[in-house]
Length: 385
Image 1 (cartoon, helix red, strand yellow):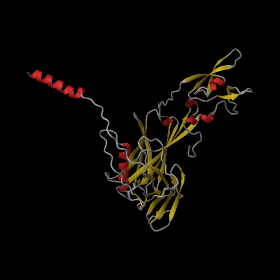
Image 2 (cartoon, helix red, strand yellow; image 1 turned 180 degrees about the horizontal axis):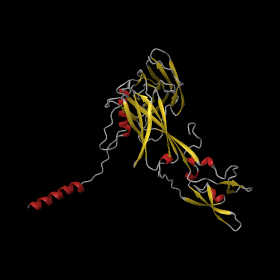
Image 3 (cartoon, one colour; image 1 turned 45 degrees about the horizontal axis):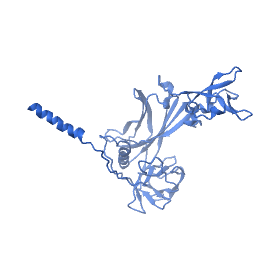
Image 4 (tube, one colour; image 1 turned 120 degrees about the vertical axis):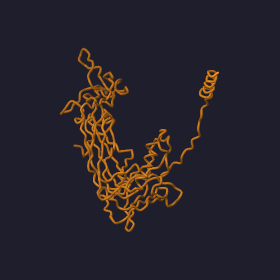
């Protein structure tokens, strides 16, 4: 009897697990878009202030939405205003400002549609120097750390941005090029370079990427305002460390309110999607629309000094880094037909010759493996050693 009851129970459970399956298509309500997004800080140091304006967009949109042709200015509580000018892509830049440490400042924006926004007045905030940037290698790649301290304030709240730049090389030198004969037929010939027989202009390049994540830190739970923070990591065998790598970090001292805002923004944009992640929360910044109180703006603008520090890491400091760029070989002919083939625009190594010594075929490679300018710039950065 007991066995019969257990067997019946299994059938009953199996019926609910496997017997009734219907597709469920939940109704997803699209969030409103087009809200103004304001990013940046009023720089109280010697560097210009850069403010970026954009609009929110739907999740299925991949196009950027910069806000163009706005009137942007910095206003003092007891003094005049300082204009910012658009440099492209929604970036608005001021000249170098000498702000009064005893005065409060705010940002004013008027869009090309006539909407006006202002931020709350913010006190002048002093940012301590970055003490050091350091790195450590382990089985998961390279981790980079920042250390800073301030003996005058406790607790301290910080925000960091960074700019990565790395040198990389093509997998192969390009030693041949297509030229046209007297009948306008393309043939592959060696470079007529007076100094060398290879095209170095497409062999050595640099790439620069700005941080897209939100890095904030606090000494709230520490006895001193002395912070050691992992700011980023580089995965093993990455191209970034194949030759020479540079990280330039920008540090800002911020208020507790700005810190809480950025923490919420980080959760909403970077830490959602898993079953254990925190639920998104409503963002309340310090920017308000004066022409329509119901209009939402996203951003938190404060006055803060910008402090910078740069770190270099050489590939020679990383034994057995083993970066390898996979490149397939393509056999191409010498002539008009070959130059029209996809991926065959860069003949590299003579492969076969006829009885008269004329090369009729060449080894070629994916253009990305020969021409580094397809993935970066061959203009050497001014700060490169």
